[in-house]
Amino acid sequence: MTRVVFMGTPEFAVPSLLALYKEGYEVVGVLTKEDRPAGRGQKIEESPVKLAARAHGLTIQQPHSLRPPAARAELAALAPDVIVVAAYGLILPQDVIGLPRFGCVNVHGSVLPRWRGAAPIAAAILAGDTEAGVSIMVMDAGVDTGPVLSATYLPIAADDTTGTLTARLADLGADLLLRTLPRWLSGKLTPQPQSVEGATYAARITKEDGEINWAEPVGLIERRVRAYQPWPSVYTTWNGHLLKVLRARAEEGSGIRNQEPGTIFAGKTASAGVATGSGVLWLEEVQLAGKRATPIGAFLQGARGFVGSRLPS
Image (cartoon, rainbow, N blue to C red; front, side):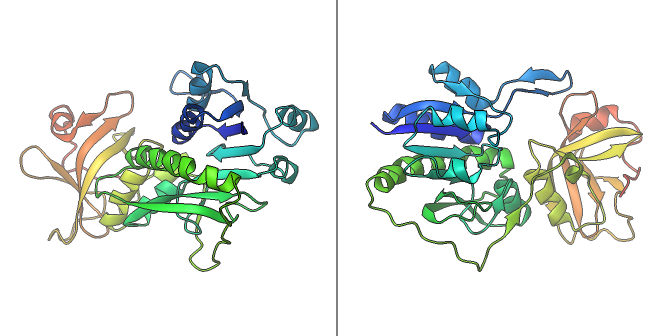
């Protein structure tokens, strides 16, 4: 039986872990990032992969880094035939990549070489791509530069957020992994080097990336709303308080004239739009700091002076 070590951390990785377990692979260990404080109360939070691994009685390791000899020795003691990686979040040193006889196989949330890096799904939405996908690749020393074993696409819906698209790609990746791994282990697949042409990089997202610049084109702002949902969410300030925009609709060429970017005006049936560098962003759901997420109609009932004010650019 093939001995598999799985490395992953967020929800994206869970379907791949469970697929390997249910398919009957011998998952001899699961590595995931350390528990960390999260949310307003900074309560210590375990990763989705850790929760899934514990629910199935799997051995869990949470090294701070894989570079110390002790961490590598602990991993080597598991004697994996193959390491499967899905959004782990730690860099794998070359001696870890070379440890198993079948190498390290990565489930990556894009069709490589497009969107190498830490945030490929958000990057695809932000760029206005019409398709996203998953690649199964053999890892090398570079950042998502290894040869590809298989890949598949799916369409990006007009209302997809990073949250909704990640869920679909996670399931797609698990399915592709189960179809690819047996062929790789049996020597029936030849890894295909990635093309240099078309390579793009998706940098890690920071909280600061969510700040809205109302002078940008409305289409880009709307894509930011979807790309940065559920985290970090796009935000602005109103009356000195942080205001998140959770859902919105872009209207190009709205006919609004002489409106400074960030100006809020009323629409029909309890709605509100914000002037941008081109077009109007119609707000659909917002969240004021310390409050619950609220549909814009309900928000307007309690936000006196909101319409007619101007949000900072």
